[in-house]
Length: 202
Ligand code: ATP
Image (tube, rainbow, N blue to C red; front, side):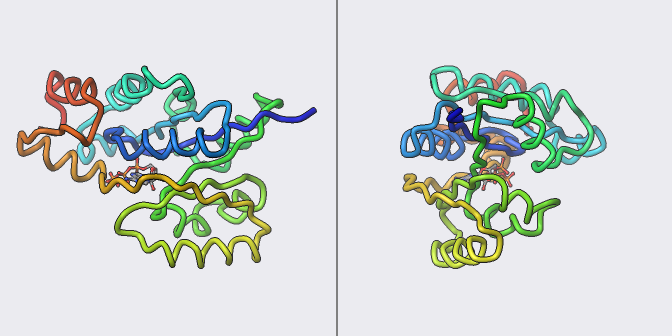
């Protein structure tokens, strides 16, 4: 049976922004993926003071952002599971549940360079296809060098996607929201409205 290719984009999504949507769409388009699953990680209630935003709010914003993108779906698996979510466990569990799907994992350059040191990083690299996207501020050369290293060391399957690099981070959005600045061009309009209406990051 030929498995259908799909990918997971995991993140804190605090909040989701146009950089996330852009890499998810670029991966789906370039690699002909059936679906890209946006998967917010659970954040411990002990960290709420740090984050100011609940799982429910982050998940709601991811759902809103995915609304008009037929190839994007939202997975609330890690949030429902609670506890610390490890990407390896999640990918293994998803593969068990969806036997007909070949899961890839999407990362920006910053996460890609760290991947080896994640919990079960080497196993993730050996077993799951990785979709690498370029992120402004992260050296493309460093990413390409690491790509070669992962391929040689772990037999990793890595696809470099030619995404339009967008210099956007959740950190910048939280800072702008705290200062009451516009988020236009950084998050989908409806997400900006959600942040404003719920007075998030103030
Ligand atoms: P923060 O600023 O809070 O650290 P973030 O903007 O990095 O957040 P995350 O939710 O941590 O967002 O990112 C999830 C995944 O999306 C990571 O693999 C990250 O590398 C990738 N990513 C985030 N923003 C971009 C971007 N602008 N371009 C490419 N990849 C990105």
